Structures are given as C-alpha cells and as structure tokens.
Image 1: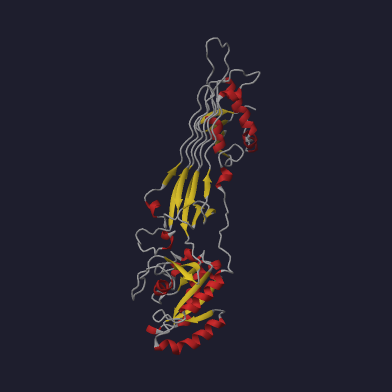
Image 2 (image 1 turned 90 degrees about the horizontal axis):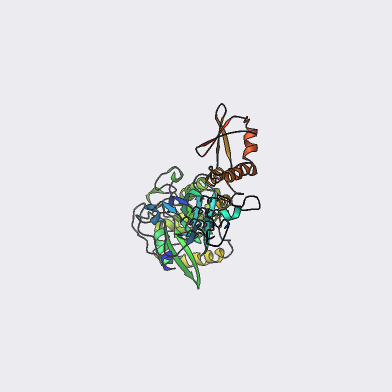
Length: 436
C-alpha cells in the first residue's frame, strides 16, 4: 500500500481523467457439420457451439496511483470466442480482458455521463460482458428437419466509450488559497513530501499523505488550485476539486496574518463560494478552519475578529502555526474524532451496461425508419444477429429467419410504421420485399 500514500509529485505523470474505448469479445459462430463415418448410415448433424466472447473487467490495484498509462493506450478489446467445430466440439471461450486502475476510479458512460462503477475495494467489476456463442446445427434438428444446413452465429460483443475519473480516496481534504501553508501543514502531519515554496501554485497536483494520531490512521489530501473564479477556469480551474468529493471532512486553511492586504474572512467566503459553484454536495461537507500563521504578529490582531465571524458561519476554528506547530495536535485530535462519525462517500451507480449485454432478450432498441417512399431501414444489434445467423441459400434457415423476425417483434414495429405489401426492407445491407 506504500505507493498509495506517497506524495504524487510528478506532474507529467499524474493523470486523473481519461477517455477510452472498450469492446467485449464477439461470440464464436456455431458450426454446420454432419456425421460421416463408415458403417454409420444417415449420420445426423454434429456442429458444435461457438465459444463465448471475453468480458471487460476492471479491478483496483495499489500498483498504480494515477490514470497515466491510459494516456497512450486508448483501445481495449477482449478476445473473441472461437467458432464451433465438427463432432459437437465447443469453441473455446474468449479470454477476459482485465484493466488495472487506481483505487477511487469512477467509470462513466462518456455518452450519457452516467456512473457505471465506483471502484473503491479490491474486487473485480465486470463492465461489459462478452457475446454469447452461437449454436451449431445439431440444435436445430427435429423430427421434421432432420438435416439442418444452418447454424447460429455468435452474438456480437458490446462496445462503449468510457470516461475514467480518479477521485482520490482521502478521509480529509485540505483546501484554501495558494500559499496559505497547506503543503507545509501536510508535510508536518503526514509522511508526504510535497514541494514547498513561497509563491502561488507551488502545488500543481493533489498530494496525498498518511496521518497517524494515537494509532488511528487517516488519509489527507492537499487540493491545489482553488482561487476566485476557479469554477470558470481561473488559476488551475476546478481541475482537482473532484478529489474533495470522496473526503469525509475538509480542513480549510486560512492565512489570518493579513499580509499583502488580504482579508481572511473574505478569503474564507471566496473559497466556499467556489466550492458551492462546483458542487452543492461538496459545499455541504463538514468543515473545520485552521487559522494559520499565528506565529506572525499581525495574526494576533486579526484572529479575534476572524474567529467571531467564522463562528457566525457555523465553523469550528483552531489557531495554528505550521512554523511552531501551534494548535496542530489539537486540530488533528478533533479531526480524528470527527472522521469516525462520518460515513464513507459512495457514488450511486446510475447505469449498468451489463443490462445491455448482447443476449436476445436484453438487446438495444430496434430502430425502424422510413428512408423513402416504400423503403424502410431496420437497425439494431438483434437485427445484426438475426441476419448474420441466417444462411439465405438454405430454405430451412430462411424459415428460421422469418420466425425470428416475428418472434422479436420486428414485423409488428414495421406494421406500426405503415409498411405495405411490396415495400422494401433493408437490414444490414440486405434488401427484402415485404409480403404479409
């Protein structure tokens, strides 16, 4: 777990949002074969089934702390299932594709924006299931059709464009204007080694550290870049505000010295306004104030008024100094006690792509459109599966095709769209004439 607790110092390698393309494996096609052996008259159909396509699986690992590896690899495609073989031999299933991500990664549907998975624990999450393997011709034999010369193709895998968004799993978030002492605070209370300098935007990425208070450990993250106008892109923008969304509580570090004509109360309100504009939920997190730089003479004069105004806003205030360690212990004890009472942040799953796995009952919506007078176009994965599974040179296979058109309601949809006898139907590049 060491890597998770290290300070993320390499700005070139820290990536917390990427877009990728994923596709589960296609199911293998069923086989058309007949038993032909000496002394075995009238050998029946023996075509084996195709193998299932590989699944797309995500899992969290302590070996990675950002999404940087997805910067250069954008496509992830699972293995297809093998086709069936003669002698009722089943095709081999496609190998699952496992994708390693950091803890705290949200997986979203890029198109809808819905959350598919929130990976916080050591578990494997199947995001896309592979297509089911097709049936061999032995499945279609019956007392009437004893020698079927057709099989069923495998169901196609699902493809999707995903948005991976890393929200660091930290119990406490450090917020405040640049250069108020957040990085110094983090270096004092934790094992993190952030860069510390006396200028704005020294911290360009979130720094993560482990704090130990009387054998109670919690994670703390320094969230950089929040200034007035951050929600519109000023400074570093709100690029890293997403990392406070998992935190249980916030420590708001405020420079109460008033150096350079700054108003501590105005700074407090400004930061909270930016957080509110970014996310109402984030603005409602419990917040404690670290009135920092109390070692400076000006701070003593400003502190009383600042504390009074902060109390009016409902905040608990601790007078602190990262130079002398004043108030740090008391603040950490208070935070440690609060953390145990705040539930863990879990994002609600709003979409499940496995609901749309390419099975015949859970397929994408069938789309029928009239492209011209007397011509209709029919689209959808189930349509592709039916067409791909049909041998149009074989009478029995064509009968099976027409039954499938009725079974899955395609004919009823065409009737509702006003189709008439003699009209043309286009499916997957093949044109048919409609006859009721």
